[in-house]
Image 1 (cartoon, rainbow over the protein chains, first blue to last red):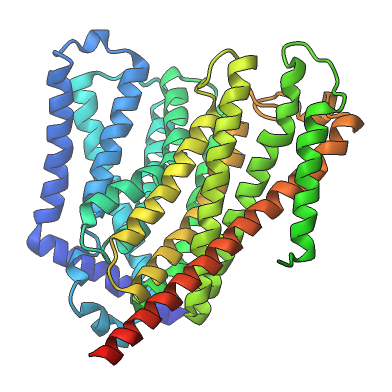
Image 2 (image 1 turned 180 degrees about the horizontal axis):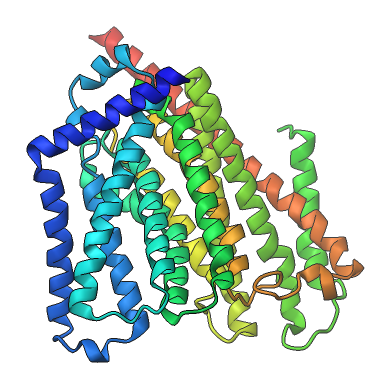
Amino acid sequence: MTSITKQIQTLVKKEFLLEWRERSALNGILLYTFSTVFVCYLSFNQQRVNLHPITWNTLFWIIQLFTAINGISKTFAQEQGGRFFFYYSLVSPLAVILSKIIYNSLLMVLVAMVGVGVYVFVMGNPVQDLPLFILNLFLGAIGFAATLTMIAGIASKSNNNSTLMAVLGFPTILPMILMLIKVSKNAMDGLDRGVSMDEIITILGIDAVVIAVSCLLFPYLWRS
Amino acid sequence: MKLSWWKIVTIVLLTYTVIGGLLMEVPRLPILNETIRNLYFHVPMWFSMIIQMLVGTVYAIKYLKSSNTEHDLKSVEFTNAGILFGILGLLTGMLWAKFTWGDFWTGDPKLNATAVGMMFYMGYFVLRNSLQDAEQKARISGIYNIFIFPLFVALIFVLPRLTDSLHPGNGGNPGFNAYDLDSKLRLVFYPAVIGWILLGVWIATLKVRLRKAEDKILEKQEDSQRAIL
């Protein structure tokens, strides 16, 4: 067990190092969020006063969704062409998938935080219960990362990666995003936190199931 | 032509469902009126769909364990049958919705969830077609099939219960059992469920046999061509 945690640590560190050296992916995602938010802002003709709370909320999560799909689809890009064989001889598949999920979660949390900052800056801030909203954002980032990492792994095996990522990713993320939108609407309206409990438990449940299934299936995906 | 016993059971049960379902007495309820007979067709479709998908997933797991192509074949065909029943369930449900809720598509969470669920499985076939190598195709689509099954179950069974739905048993509505699934309905409903599930299994096994036969014919043609050359 200790060896697996150690392997995960090393792999996560490797991901961060690679990212830090190239910085293309991170900057790409951040710029993607920023420009999407800005396009939305300008498309609504800068009338943020008239933006309905439901529109505000839905638009925010759709931007998050697209950012996540774009960011995570690159997860296995560097593992093309034989690098998997190299890992194969060194680490367990469990360590690989868990390190990818952890790295993607951290990345998504970072991007979501920057995203919400920019979004609130240009679109106004109708959120009343900010701590719950941020907590929900955390849950969402981790959930996106957990679900989409496995989908990225599956999509990376075929040659039309980007189409498959969207086709397979959007439906699988839907149960999650419906719950997230509901909780964040509750947070916007400043409802009692007990109201959102059911949804939060469901999100955690979906996360747990998805991570468990990913861990079970990844060894098979790896071998092909 | 000799049929196995369960195929005869299917024929008997479904004949009984159609005749009994349309002719036997049903409780008179406001709004539902005679449309309650759709209970014998609409609801069993979902039972059948989820069973076929479950069997498809189990065969996908078996394939990953054994790499036996027959398991992959069964996995695909049972999933296919599941999709067929999902679409039939949507169509019968739409018809029922038109006459009770007033519209073909009401935006009810269960309707939307099922539509998305069908998208999951359409993606399954897109994935299969975009992989070239037969072995890789079987393995990766099997992985995807197993991956989406729990999400699909969450989508159609857990989420509608958390939101407001017009369906019985959801969003605080009482289930059918609570008020109107009386013993007369049960008399046809349970045989109908078993009948439709068996029909799904029958379709899937037929398709598996057909695919195997096609493969054999292809093999023979290749052999004979090789012999000519």
